[in-house]
Image (cartoon, one colour):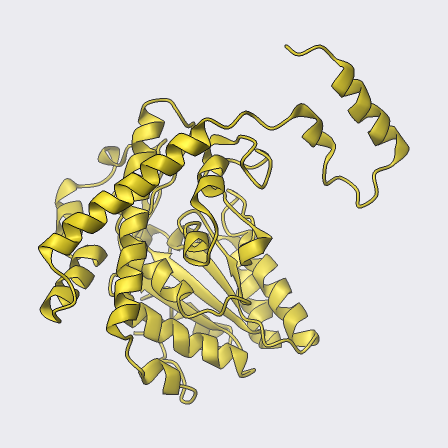
Length: 352
């Protein structure tokens, strides 16, 4: 185990989540599970080109994101995009990004499953692994210089810890004590490479010690433990005490993405063992034991979420492609004459 979070501040973290908060988290985790199931089906049907599901990892990132204020910023990797929905981003434009059509706020310019929106303080990310980490450090340093109380949360997978960007970000964050929480979802596989081939360290969390700030390894499939740890780290960052690295141990129960076949490198027995630790099952059991949930409510929620997701898919899928002239949007703050002429020329071209 790596070094534990320092004391204080821990008051907020000691306060348990209420039944209503746990139900809110369970509903969102269930929404993400249904959404992933449906979108993977669409990809197999050829209706979208690519999708990255997070099945089995819902507690690790939603529990962490739940510890943030709306004014804080998220720097995601592949499996955290749906935190946007938790923060109020509408489902239809979220899905439109996967289709890459005119409903996408990023105008179809990003790869599918790379959702982002400044409206909910979630930054766009790159499939070049780990590049979001120095970006998060830069934003956190800016917040510190401007004396804002904003906290940045930077997500990564275990594979990203092998990147040079991880080292640069951790070193800079430690030296300048920026208000940042690093969250590593250690799902044991960086596509086909197991964690023990990523590092010889006893954990990922222990790496923080070398950079001069605390790291902690937790059960990433226990949403309450994730929240408590993230809340303590966020409070610490907001108090000016610097960054924290959280290693949330979890498991990617499905493929790395719709382009991957995990049966080529992973033993099904390992998957079956981790299914017994499914974060949704664990939280559902806790809610049932506390009298806050039942089989009837579960059936009703599943039906409601399927209806909501299917309706949003139907609406998003009908949207047309982005207009060709949007190619010229967002290039300059004030559009120069030559770009304006090119836009008008494109508009005069006959449709193909």
